[in-house]
Image (tube, rainbow, N blue to C red; front, side, top):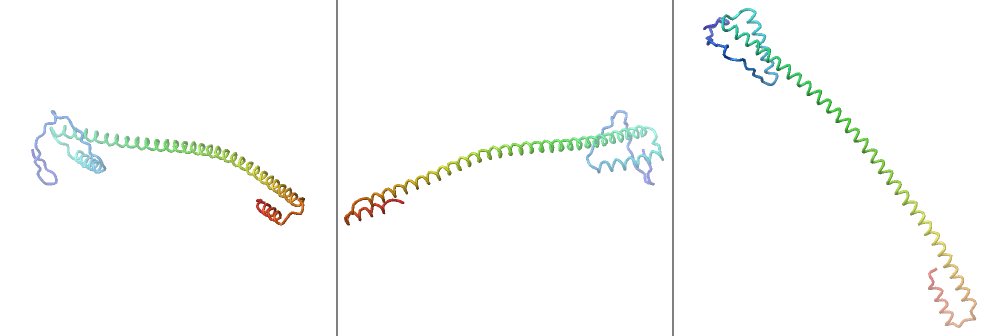
Length: 180
């Protein structure tokens, strides 16, 4: 069978579509969508001007069925993409909320730990201050005791009879050795 298009003769082999079922071939990307739109436009223009006789009418209906199925597949893909986008948006929002909640809990826990450490440090500083005050009091008492011992010793040295030169030297050495 020969078909004339744009002034050229094209050999078209006879096809029996009664035994075959249309198969949907899906390619990804915008290229496939553009090709489908171009094919639809040229097929619509051809079918409006020229109706194929005989077995080609079933071919044309099969092509229309394939076009409809391809369009449905594209719509399903687009719907699926929209659902995926909504799912990811929802996931992102939920993740943000959970991260925010965990951050708040972590902050609260940190402040609790800081508060406990502050109490412990305050207690230990208070104990340290008390001990330092007690040490200062003991130091003052020790100085007083040393002064008293020094005074008593000097009084003992003065009360003794006129010592000999040797005794004066020994007494002077004794007084010098005291850690006052």
